[in-house]
Every structure is written in structure tokens, then in C-alpha cells.
Image 1 (cartoon, rainbow, N blue to C red):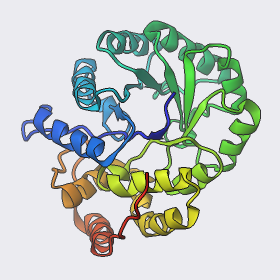
Image 2 (image 1 turned 180 degrees about the horizontal axis):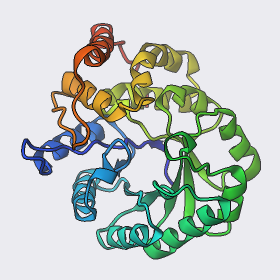
Image 3 (image 1 turned 180 degrees about the vertical axis):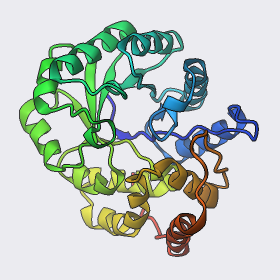
Image 4 (image 1 turned 90 degrees about the vertical axis):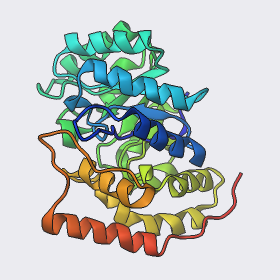
Length: 298
């Protein structure tokens, strides 16, 4: 159902901390013009937990306005299953093509609770669901065994695999074949995951460098691995910026330098400063200075 590059977009703010609709529309259109295959609103990178549910629906509607016939998904990441179900229903009413669902971000569910919570959200929204499995950030591991317990519900169609263990991708394919669309959610494991069978990439740093992200995906799909790997090796220092406590600030700085956006974040986050900012900026500027020529692809 969902393949290719689906960036997890950032949320843009004005100086007064309100949503910047015009800047989001501009940035989302940059993604679509580069050839991405859909948009995902209000994930970790989109500062979803810092937004009210109404704000998340606003951001989603902007994604849907720009994505057109391509899918626009809303992330559901709530502390309580009740609130997650309420947001799933709102997403369905707003016309979401699907949900990316995170287990509770506060209480670390055991496997039985994880299955129950995910099934409740899927039933509430009655939309296709991509399970977001990120044991490092959220401390709940959606294992192969848990996916087995979800497989009988056709609403679960995909998994964003962010366990940071590349072996998990092969384990999922070996167990389920093509039952679930497997998308990688770790930027600096993207080539590795695509090479072993992932069918998509939920991209982060690609917000600042969408053409390179799309090129890697399309070249791998065409089995032009050497060309894809050349771009990926250039990209790697940038992709490492996604795997950080400061991924939001890192990637917003990259968007600022590469596509002229702003760095505003919602408190308690603050934009990067001092030595950390200098280091990240050096990485981005070094990559911009030697940006590779992209080969032609279909």
C-alpha cells in the first residue's frame, strides 16, 4: 500500500508560536516536487507531542492539501489509549489516508498491552495503520511476535522499522513475506534496509535534501546499487543528524540552510546554540559544498 519515500515533515511555527501555514505549504510542496510518495504529519520530527490535537489536524490538512492523490498520514502518539482513539477518529473525519501509530509515549506497555492498544486505535480510526516500532525512543519494542498478533487485522498494513537493528528487517520479511509493507525509519540505515527488502523510507534529513533521498530510493529499486551507494556515502554524515536527541533542531537547521526555512521549535525545545550548533552547521555546509550530481532515473 505504501512504498517509496514518505518524509515525516516538520511543523513550522511563527514568531508567536502559532502554526505557520504558508511556510508548511511551501516546504511540503518542495517534497512533492522532488518526487516523494506521500507525507506523514506530526511524528517525532513533526513535534506531534508538543501540539494539541486540533493543531495536529491542521497540520495534517495542509499535508493532504499538498499531497493530492498521494497518501497523507497522521501520526497518533498519545499517552493514553483513550486520547489516541479520539485522535484516530478525528484523523478519519479529516480525510486521512492512514495513521502512523506509536504505542503509549509515557507508559511502557508489555506485549499484551501493546497489542490491545494498537488494535483499539486501529478500530477507532478504521484506517490503514503503519505501526511505528522504535524501542530506543519510546521504549516499547514492537517485536515480530507482536506483529504476529496484529496480522489477523487487515487494517495493519505497514511497519516503520526503527529498532536500530538491521537484522529485524530480514526477520520481518522471513516471517511475513509481503504481509506488511516494511519501511525503514532510521535515516543512517536506509540504504542497508532498502537493500535487504524494505519497500519504503520514512525520511527525516530528506526534508532538507529531498532529491538525494528520492534518488537513492529509485536507484535501489532499479538495482543500480553502486550509484545509490555513492550518493548514500556522501549523505551519511547528514543522515547521522537524524539519530540524536536533537533531531528536530538538527533537521530544522538543515532545512534553514538548504531550503531557506526557519529553525523555530516549540518549547521546551530551543534552536541549537554554541558548540553543538557550530558542529551541526559545519556538517551541513560541508555536504552542501560537495553535493553530488544525481544520475537520471525513471
